[in-house]
Amino acid sequence: MTTVGVVVFPGSNCEHDAVEALRGLGADAELLWHGDSAVGDVDAVVLPGGFAHGDYLRPGAIARFSPIMSSITEFAAAGGPVVGICNGFQVLTEAGLLPGALQKNSGSRFLCAPTELVVASAQSALTCATNVGEVLHLPINHFEGNYTCSADTLHELRAEDRIVLRYVSNPNGSIDDIAGVCSAGRNVVGLMPHPERACDPLLGSADGRRLLASLLAAAGDRLPV
Amino acid sequence: MRFPVLVEVRLRPGIADPEGATIQRALPALGFDGVQEVRVGKAIRFNVEAVDEAAARRQVDELCRRLLANPVIEDTAVTIG
Image 1 (cartoon, rainbow over the protein chains, first blue to last red):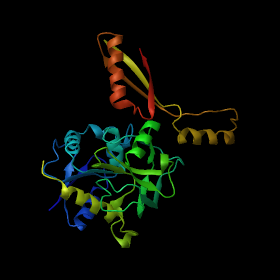
Image 2: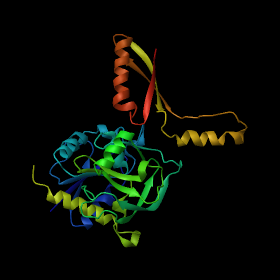
Image 3: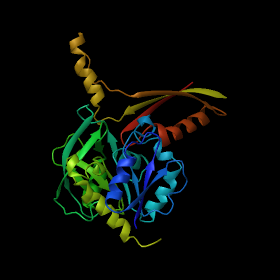
Image 4: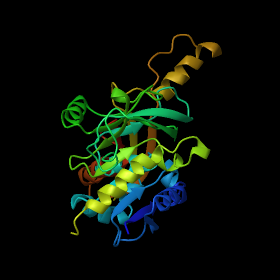
């Protein structure tokens, strides 16, 4: 059975939703404390949403130095699938595992709303079981989700098909409507929307299952290191 | 020796500052008409132990690079002493 490690930083608050969503798809999911030095025997890692360290200094700025991050960096370097959701995306950019940065929403408002996303690349650990052009309904919940990067980085992301998700109607000013990107190895993916909160029609959308199922497929396809 | 340090973290030129813009928009209603280009940053103060000011500055630059500022969107102005 595929096992996913969901990291908990002080201030993370979406870890239980992530675990429930992954278990609902048939995977095993366990919480990994940020202070642990190793991710252990997991097939994928999720950095969930929340407010790690209260977003003090900058979102993710302190979490990136947590003991578990060295192990996650090694896991990613070895090709392991790593997904950062919202605050997790912020941690990944601060840690340098993904390019760019997340800044304050252009409208100076905290956004908590359902949004429409379009899959821009199916070549990533989070979209490999979806189709380019597919529209997904996922909620966003953030004040600092405005993705930005240098012109060179944007050029690189476009040229390498590493923009994974775009907003259909840009809510926060993100450059090129970017909602999610992946690493050069395509195994590290960050996104601001919350797939783990869109796994049940009762709660508005089950489209998040499309992304999490991709993650499990990517995790299951990995050869043992 | 102990050196007092002030690090001003600022958004780099060209990076949008919605907080600054919001403050700027609020000012005319308070009677301040001539205020332009409001930018909001952070002031971080601390002391460093170092043999001399040059060594202190090196430590501070490293601290800024690794933690205090995100080079994608921020730069710093350092005052030592």
